[in-house]
Picture: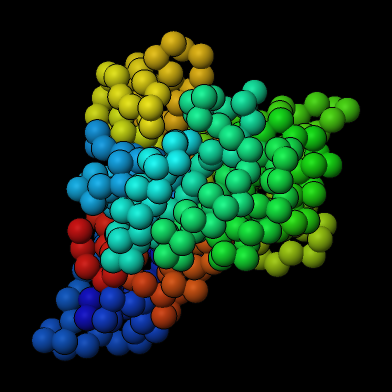
Length: 387
C-alpha cells in the first residue's frame, strides 16, 4: 500500500490538497489516518501537483520506432517512451498502407493490446480524401471498403478501437455504422466534407473529429465544414494537436470556448469536456532533428517541426502529452484541472474506458503523474507502480 501525502491532486473541476491512497494497483478511498509503517509506503509530495495519467487517442511512434511495423519490439519501444513521459494509456495509430501492410500491422498490434501494452489500434485511413491527405501516401488511398474493414476488425480481435475516414467518400456512412457495430469509434478526418455531410456522419454514429482544423476543409463563414459541425455537436469529441505548430494558441482557445458553450447550451453537466489533447507523435519524438519514416513517406524534422521531405505538408508532431498538457496551461491559459481533463478524462471517455482510467477516482487504476515546479513530469505511476 502506498499513501501519497502533501499533494495537490487535480480532480475534475477542482484541485484538492491532501493525500491519496493506492492499494492493489488501484486508487482507494481517502485515508483518514496513517497506518503503521509496516503497512504502507508514505511518499511526501512536498506540495506538488498530481494529475491523472495521460490518455493519448492518436500517436504513431517515438524513440525512432513506429507502430506501423506491427512488431512487438517497435511497439513496446514507442509505448515505453510515452509512458515514462506520463502517457499511461496509449492507442497505436496506423497511417494509410497497403492491404497486406495494414493486415500484418493490425494482427501484430492485437497481441500487444491483449497484453495491455497499448489500449487499442487506431486506423487513420486508408479511406481519406486525396485533397486532404496530408502526410498519407495519396497512391494508397481508397474508397471505403466494408469487406476490408471487417477483415481488419477480425484480425484485430476486438482491439481495433478507432478508424478515421472522410465521410464524403462513397460508402463512408455505411462504414461508420460498421465500425460502431464492431465496437470501434468512428472519427471524421482528412476530409473535404461540408458541414451537412459531416453532420450526417455524426448522425450515423461517428463521435470524434480527428485533429480538428488540420487536414480538413477550413471554416468559412458561408460553409462551416467539419470544423463547425464538430464544434457545435455535443456528441462529438474533438482532437487537438497542441504543439504550437498545428494549431495556434488562440485557435486552441476558440475550440475550448466553443465546445464549452455548446455543452452549456445543451444542458451538459460538469464533466462534459469535449476537447481531447493528442500528440500525433511520430518516430522522431524524443530523437531530435533528422529524417524519419511515417509509413512509406519520408519525413524531415528541423527544430522539432516534422514535415514531408518535400515540405508539402506537416507530418505529425514530435511532442509528448506532457508537452501538450503543459502548453495548455502555460500558453493556452487553461486552468490546470481543465487541461488535465483534456489530457486524460475526455480521451478516456471517447474510448469508453473512463470507468478504469482518466481521473483520480477511487476504484480506477492508479495511473498518475507527479509534476515538477514547471509542470513537467517528475514521477509516473502505472497500476500502482512507480516507473
